[in-house]
Image (cartoon, helix red, strand yellow):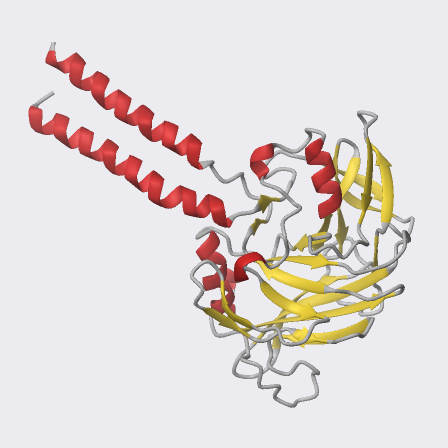
Length: 340
């Protein structure tokens, strides 16, 4: 190897190492958790399980217990069951963790809340993303609202709360966490009392033509279809688990409580076909959720880029540093070899 070729090889190795240090740590810190999704990251199997209403429903099973149910177009995960199954060793630790504090550091978009005085200014890793204020229903156990069209009551009256929201805005926000992710993830922090399953939820996400106001596409969250027909039935609400104990194939008993209102996520949902890159940047991104709390009331619903929707685990910074070190080691070995 010539001296110039050897220097070029060393330079490339050092450049790769520096890129690793600069890029991967920030990306890893931004992604909080990866959702198990069969066929994509190899964790979990598809099967059936009884939902909170006692009906058999398509499910993603890990250790034989349901970490997610299919509601029309959406997979809805229990963050509490995910955390318990991971603690038992059936979800890899490099998938992140599912018991993070909600809305930490202004990273997440707050869509629905029972608290007044909230906004969505300066969200995301850059702190420069501004979105429509959340739908606020203070001290109301049952509420419904449209987020993203700047008409939260859907009565043709402009709300004037920093909307509307475009597909391009949402994509820019998601890409700050992962340039390859075009699918938003939603999560809910409940606020129920008692042990019973007591919160009902249905919803839809719409792509609306920004010029004509016509609906281009919808994804539905309801109990009527398990085939992803996209037809939203407002009154076909899913029932959320309260306190529940499930026995895994290993014999492990998973006892979790979704009703604490503890500032941690209870349920996480995403739609595998909601690839926003397929739509125009100026199209509107609008959500409509209908919540009914039987014992107290819902708390908050977020949209986030911090959770990877079924993709492979994000490489750990330490792993990438070792890789970079290894490349440098190879450079040194190559240098010694060709000097003989």
